[in-house]
Amino acid sequence: AGTFGLQIGKYFMDFSMMTLVRDHRACGAILTKTVGDLLARAGMEIWWWGWKLEYMQEYDRYGGGSIPRTKYYDQVQRLKDAPAPDLHALVCEGSALIESVPSASCVRPVIVTLQDGSGPRGEMLAEMM
View 1 (cartoon, helix red, strand yellow):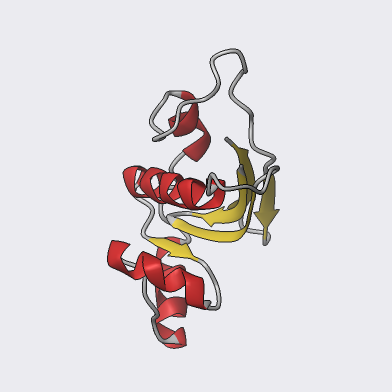
View 2 (view 1 turned 60 degrees about the vertical axis):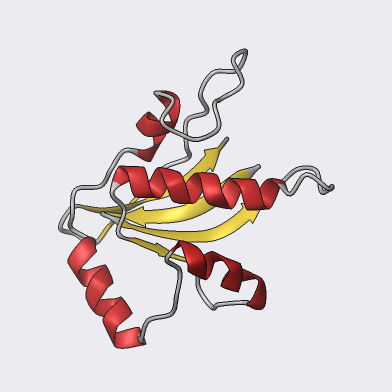
């Protein structure tokens, strides 16, 4: 299973999750809970999922919910310059709920640094677990 997202400071936008095999094991649900735990341990303050779909309501009991657009933008502005936690390091050191396969090395995320003339503003992450 894998997740793809954008990390800017203490803000993480998950734009896609996937599993290579679709079957009864619910790998996507397990990945969602694992990523949520990792982001919480890292001190991330916002995990944006985008438009709320019906199946996402089950995650409200873990703190999910909707916020007005103006509040969302204010929070992104506040968090974008916060020190960004190293999610890759947390996974590799074993802080994730699910351990890496022992025979495989820890997969390095694909990172693209965005710049606006004043320095790095974010990293595009593709974490494979």
